[in-house]
Length: 66
Image (cartoon, rainbow, N blue to C red; front, side):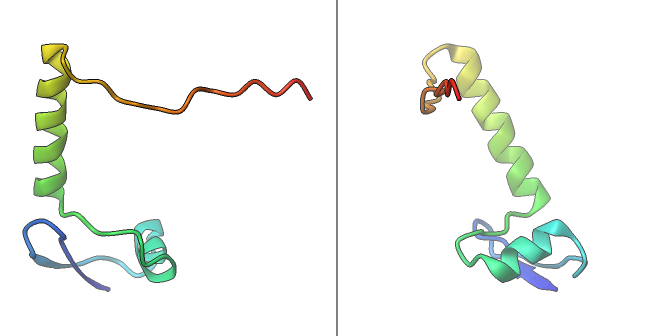
């Protein structure tokens, strides 16, 4: 399967049998990001988290007593 990175527009080929390929086929909202772009964003996020000014907003966990 040929895919295109949403950040750098590099075209790569991934195996058709992988979970990522299935997600890209079945759900158009999922986008592909190449490994160099993914690593660069992860490194920048870790740098921002280390400064202490970065907050990751997550929804509060719900306790179901069922």
